[in-house]
Length: 111
Image (cartoon, rainbow, N blue to C red; front, side, top):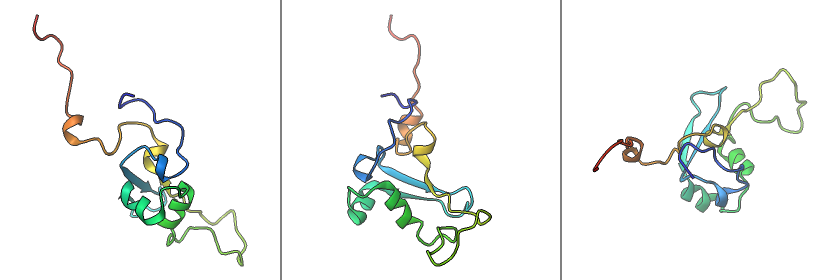
């Protein structure tokens, strides 16, 4: 697998998450960005925890999370859009060491 290849199908739980760094973001709340070490999340929640549940726990205090069952949901009230940043947009892995990112291929060499 090359670094610019798209990631494989969306993982289902922390044990199958493809990167060492788990980044979470929300387009509605730019101040609510974060990155977590995969090993720490797996130790805290368990490696078999589904990613949707991990996201719910991380964004639990978001003011745009689903309303409690007692209140009616409205199409006009914004909803939480927290997501795993690196699973949504393919590209260079977030945990690639900085030294590797600067390497480049030099044509020529010994002849």
